[in-house]
Image (cartoon, rainbow, N blue to C red; front, side, top):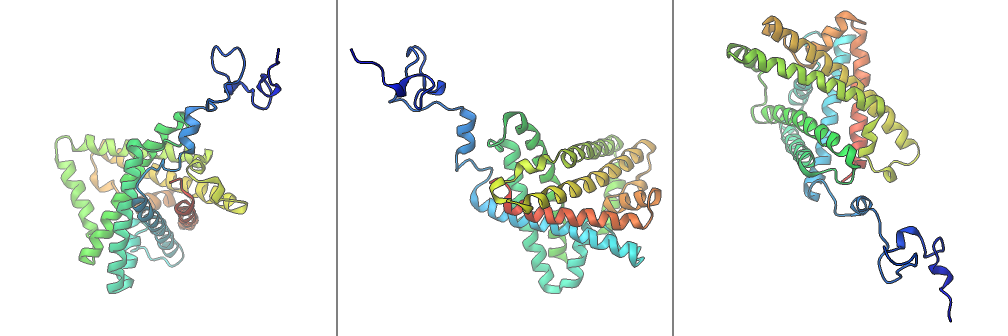
Amino acid sequence: MSSAPASSAPGGPAGTAEDEEPGSGGFAVVDAPARTHPFRRRRARPSDRDAPPWVEAFGRVGLVAYGLVHLGIGVLAVRISTLGQREDHADPRGAIELVAAGGGFLGRWLLAAAALALTAFAAWQLRAAAVGFNWAKPEERWRKRLGALAKAIGVLSVAYLAAEFATRLQGRRNGFRSTVDEVFAHPAGRWLVAAVGLFAIGMFLAMTYTGVRATFMGDLVPEKLPGYRRAVALVTGSLGNLTRAVTFGAVGVLTTMAAWEDMPNRIGGVDVALRTIAAHTLGATMFCVAAVGFAAYFVYCVIDAYARHP
């Protein structure tokens, strides 16, 4: 009478709990594949991408362009603070104006290329918001999808500005003001503006959570960030997200108050938010502080473009 092989005993090299089939009496079924958690198989699948490879490639370029826009905002903030150039506007439109004004014909093509790359990144994020992030843990998936949707909206707005300057070589800064006036003239306009303000406040809360908890690190492939690279991503990502969070919070409060008081002239974007924060805190020095945060976000965008999970 032969005894069972030692390797088939529970706890032996081949006799783990995962190897056992129900009703096998504790013995391993050696001709059956080892059972693993279905979520682990999903994460390990190389083809589990949030976008087609060509969209992803253009999208990574767009992510760098998005970072460059924030770097441009930082440059404008320094100019306002140290050079006293109050006519500058530290916002995405102002950053794009820098390229349009100083690049000539080449600047026009650069903005056109940036608009295409930004649109590709937005498409990547929209698809990820719909069906992506399958590599993430189930409890994190919906939060990441909502974040991708919000980021896609922001990136598309910057892509529109870049395309506007690329096709006409100049943007309409007063176009924003006329649009606001038209919205307020509509019977439900104030409610719509209030909803936008509350959305911006919600973005403030989400970005603050992201910056403090550093949840953005979960979007990066750890193997691509050995040693100091991970530390740089952590510091720049946290600082950049917190800077953007404060800016979004100020925009949200100003927009909501403007809707409540029926004063459309108080509505503004990033530039108005920074000026309001500066007036109530550090003055012109606040622009330098903001510049550091926006520059940090540019560095993080470069790292993100390199190490973001496909």
